[in-house]
Length: 337
Ligand code: ADP
Ligand code: MG
Image 1 (cartoon, rainbow, N blue to C red):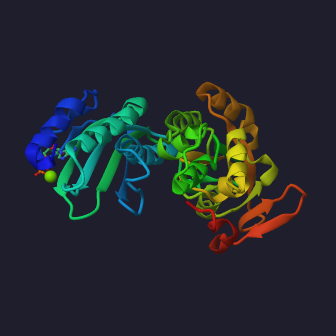
Image 2 (image 1 turned 30 degrees about the vertical axis):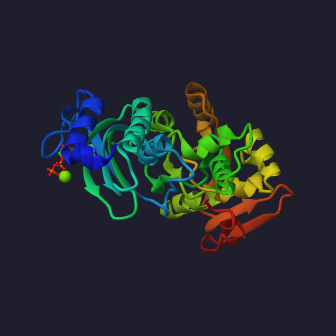
Image 3 (image 1 turned 120 degrees about the horizontal axis):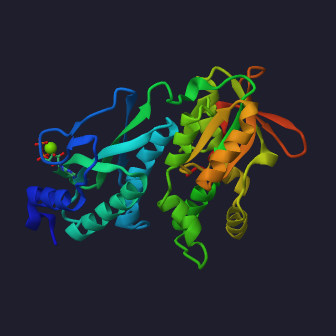
């Protein structure tokens, strides 16, 4: 069905009837000039937005509308997670090239958005709908909450903190390599899904904040090196990554081997992992492990913060320590997604 058969208002009514859900904080969702929300006095709002443009941030021929919808919300929910909060609601605005994008495509897209929305308990609050000349344009904004004083900033890192990463960095970038090569050999789907269906670490970030474990936190969208550099710079410190500690999953090692990719380079600079990178005092190691157990998500200590140096140092397995110039991650840029 063409969008013109349904009309803009018909389309909005369809979305509202399918996805409008109730939540005590949402006094009004879709249907008026603005959504209305209440916030508990002990909470603060978190607000984040992302713009996704066809052929810059995604390609329609390598993904499905469901996965595109899922990921559009996931990248924003991940930002809320990185502040230690939980999502409440989101707006979804679309620029639709109506000659190419059917109502069925949009239905699947909203199904994908809703698929993740249910997992992270985020509710559709509204959006905007417009025709676009050529490209499909997606903008998602997520509103979240965090208990006042519990929010975690990038710049909260303290001297001698341990640095941890959740999950399995590098798998998402490996998934992108597979998609780019157009080969979907058997057994690769879990790695491809890490790129197309990322799972934002909402519970993990929230527990690390609530339990006063993390000092500084950021989500890994540009790769572990680049995002750790953001964290150390904001914290006014330097950082060291011990390459022997970097968690490289068996799936990543196996697949990278088949594709002549370097798993460590993918883990350091691949990007789009949507894992969390955080720092915590050395006396919190057991507390971190308890949260990891509770979430069923590994939290691996990969290095530390230090006032003794600037930028990021890489400790190689043979003991050699290499200074990485933040402006010149050239060796790794090659593999950036
Ligand atoms: P306005 O002219 O006030 O911007 P709209 O006609 O654009 O109103 O939107 C009407 C209602 O539908 C609003 O509540 C808006 O948030 C919601 N809405 C519009 N487009 C979308 C969309 N793509 N997804 C979800 N809600 C939408
Ligand atoms: Mg509008």
